[in-house]
Image (cartoon, rainbow, N blue to C red; front, side, top):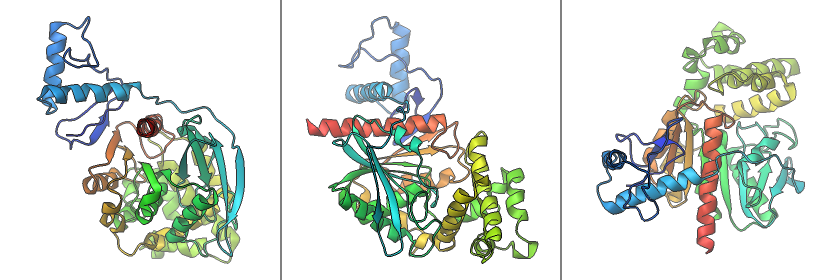
Length: 400
């Protein structure tokens, strides 16, 4: 049995053994006297009995299993879970990846550290300085880049030569350009999609992964968010998105928006982009985040975000089958991976993380009960930092 503990977690006994459910404000029980790493000084007889009963309820019957349980819990409690301070890049650049596209990249942290590449969401979302704070800058060489058409990459909001497999190739071109033999991969939302596609194409180049808000780009996921499913939870946010489209075109909102986002009239494009972006920004947090919602009013951001997202979704992510990423899990089964998922994620519902977990039980699934979709929600941010810390410990251990 394999269990991973988060700070102040408890494991629901009925769940599969690689699932952690984080319970806020839970204080771990003291550890049993038979553990080689812990003592029970000050622990009452009742406390020791309670601890043993708890472990046995989780399926731990032997002494060694109980020792392993306590060791895992101690390790998790000791992990840093706080975001690191803001830092500035030590190098930036632009890499021409095709006759049309040039991508922005940057490096921060330790130039001699373990390389990690951050894959942003959307597609079309671009990177932000806060993305650097998930990683220990003393240990990691942190690489951020804006995918084709997003952020500082050029041309802005361009859909030509912009497909999933183009981005996979770009990641490899950037790795080679920076002379990195292999690296850790970190991605959330669409970034998790791209991380899976990249790692399945180049498993020998990936040392570990941290994935958040799993998005497998299946039809049922697109239909849930863009064809009315999530409207049951956010009817107030849905109506402006819906009302931009005439009733006779509402059979497929994805295609109706595609028509407008590719209109010859720029104001039509901007109006559609604002509505598309606001719908996602209003649903991305468990509790509304006004600063994020305002991004929908930024025409420059919204145009790239909406056009590129819609382009990928209309084309089913350019995957040959609906279950392509699940069908190819065997290629990456050996990669040390943590999946972080908000229980109340409306943008990328937990069903996708659960389906990935069932196909890939070797990966650790962390379910944050008081969070939605965004990486910036406190519970999710803590688990993302902790997952990087776990990989950091594993890398250091392997270097000994």
